[in-house]
Image: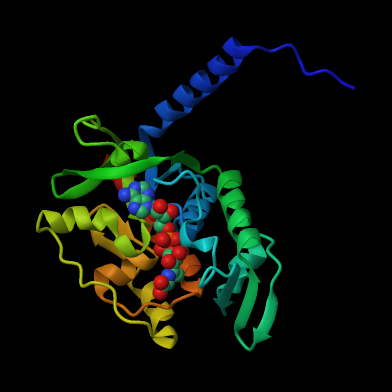
Length: 264
Ligand code: 48H
């Protein structure tokens, strides 16, 4: 039997610390910070990274994928309506056509493939890290204030731990139903969210994609967060608009990043 190489505790710890510090240092200033690693954030991140942009996803959970792992009603099957199955084709996920314009596939297969595609494109991930606040300068969102997620479950007197900030040319709110980045603007009276509408699948998905965009200078909103901002109907357990909203967010972010590059 082949023996493991004779590497000990010190080298292993050094490898983790050195590599994390090097990479984290790179994340302090990037082209785009995406808050939330669900389907819309992952598609946006992948598209931007494939176009050569420096992208960081901030995800409060220990895992990426958000609501994409469990399909609907805890049944791990994902449905996608035409034309969004093209994203499944791109990332190599097999699916079955169940009726005209509707496909179904395995949630774990689709979710793990999307995560893998985003990482392979070069997206950097900060997991177990939560958005605590935003940085606003001269009427523009230009960074996020972050902290380790576990401190949120500690008693307040123990958890008095100051956060840090990282900056980017553009920020994307991909935090799903909660729209947590946008809510930071709302708390300060800078924007008013209409609140998510009731379910109406036929209408919802086109509306989500159409309304994806910059909701405040420097901040683009994508995925379910779009519904919360604009009061749009929800679509329940179908994910095509999450993909195409993420794609649209990336296209808009690309233009904004280039505009900022010229200004800076
Ligand atoms: C860091 C955060 C924070 C924070 C949240 O919910 P998601 O899967 O979001 P989307 O919009 O990409 O996809 C929505 C979809 O999953 C869904 O729920 C659908 C289609 N519902 C339809 C319906 O009618 O119900 O992912 C959001 C991610 C999660 O991983 C969160 O942990 C993360 O954002 N997140 N990360 N800091 N403050 N808040």
